[in-house]
Length: 130
Image (cartoon, rainbow, N blue to C red):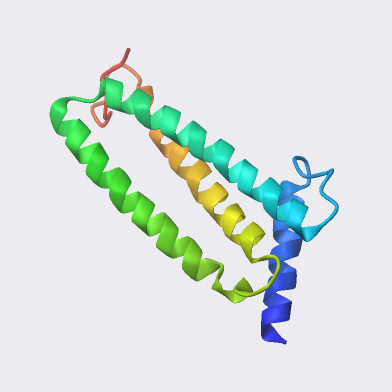
C-alpha cells in the first residue's frame, strides 16, 4: 500500500512536470520514454556547458572541474537512486527516476552556467570576465 501511495504521488508530480513535453504520451511506457528523452536533452545541455567551462579553465581548474564533476555525477546517481526507491518495481519507476535525473542535471547546468559569466571586480569569480 505504501509503495502504491508513493508511486501515485511521484506519478502526479512527475506527470505535471512533464505535461508540456509529454502531451501525446498515452501510456506509462510513453511517459517513461518521454521522461527519458527529456533527461537526455538536459544531459546534452550539461555536457555543452561543461565543455564551455573547460575551455575557460586553467590547467589547475580543469583538474578541479573534472574531479568535481565526477563527484557530482556519483552524488546525482546515488541521490536519485535513493529518492526514487519508493517507486522501485512500479511501472512509474523509470519515469520517476528520469525526472529526478533531469531535475538534478538541470540544476547542475545552471550552476556551471553561473560560473561562465562574471562582473568586473567580482573577486569570487571562477573565471575572469570575458
